[in-house]
Image (cartoon, rainbow, N blue to C red; front, top):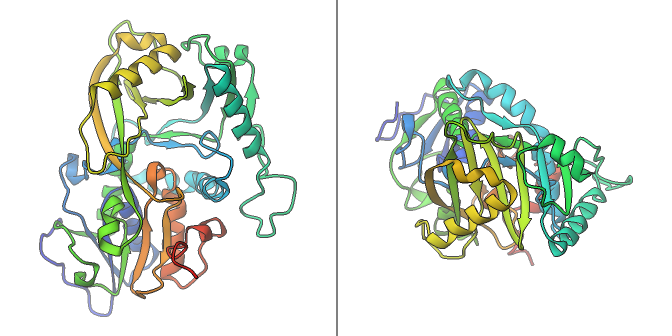
Length: 393
């Protein structure tokens, strides 16, 4: 199936090439292929180092897999927040369509809620400020931005008492100064997701070219979807830079305390932390370094992650350290991805620059790419992510 040569197009079929075969590229390729029978879809992706040909060098292989626009909300990032909420609302339908392709074993979705907490007074003030800001945001689906707020209910965001936090997550230390609960958030298993998307693509007849793309001009296709992550800077001149993030994968041993039941996010001494349940263990992140193309895990990064995690979840010390890995998040200057048609190249559609939110923003990215291919307007929340926003006069 993964032909190193260019697959022959069917007579009369439109040919769409996707440059980049990690989570965004796979999801776009699958969705394009299943949207119409007269389209041949090919993925250009050199990395097949993971199980069953899944790319294991991209940011999605390393990710925590959180679906977290509310717990990541921050004043001044209105467009980022709106895009994240739009994508979160699309995840149930996306997962339902993908379910037939999930391999036997753990499910894609691993958690259906998030608790966000702060350990000291300064972090508590910042967290309260961010959550109060989020609750006041206008509905991104309302083009007039009228109405009182985003339409947030208690299922999206509510402050909880320390007693409520203990009842929901009894394994956590009693260190929270303030805590919030988001029942519409949660997490997916990034590696199960990649495997399911790979299977889904194959089921729809998507083919692969296992080679690096040196220039978009060299890609033989009617339309080209650029989903190359940090590599998009060289291919399209976009202001996308690699930002290193380190993640630990822990495995429960006999007699260990059970991991948190849902995602736990925290500010510990000013540093962000997340604990994400996985089948048989836990994922811990998230450091962030502006180190260029650097995938090496540092002693300092592991030390800080484990120290902060033990502050919140003391039982973590008995877990097995199964993996320490680093990935490169493709960040843009304003933390928004680049979604939609390239104004200078009518063949090119951007789906890149998602930073730390590549998995979370997958459904809305797919919607934007499909709309662009079909000549329709992109989702309202995606308009701020236009590829030419830094070059307009």
